[in-house]
Length: 144
Image 1 (tube, rainbow, N blue to C red):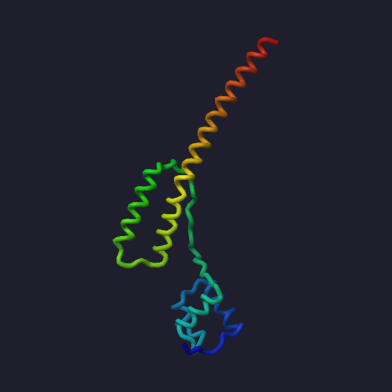
Image 2 (cartoon, rainbow, N blue to C red; image 1 turned 60 degrees about the horizontal axis):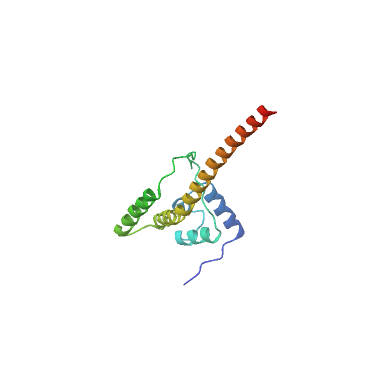
C-alpha cells in the first residue's frame, strides 16, 4: 500500500477546523484545500485524528417518564426487531449498532423490572408501617 506525503500539523489543524465547522468529507475534498490528497486519504486522516463532526442542528427531545411495560411487551418488541434483522439483506453499521443496543437493553430489562417491583412493594410496606405507627402514637397520646 503506497503512502502519500505526511500530514503537517497545519493541515491537521485546518482539517479539524473544517470538520468542526460541520463540513462533510465530500465538501472538504471538493474544496481543494488539500491538493494531492484523495478523499480516501482525507477520510483516513479524519479517523486517525479521531475527529467527530458536530451536527449543528442536533436536537434531542426531553426524556419523560412513561408507564412501565411488561416483560412480555419487551420480549415481543425484541422478537419483532430480531425477525426484521433476519429478513434484511444488508445492514449498515449504524443499523447493526441500534439492534445491538436494543438487544442489550432487552437482556437487562428483566432484572430491572424485578428490582422495580421489589422496591414498589417495599414502598407499600413502608407506607403501611408509617400509618400503623401514626395510629399507635395517636392512641398513646390519647392515653397520656
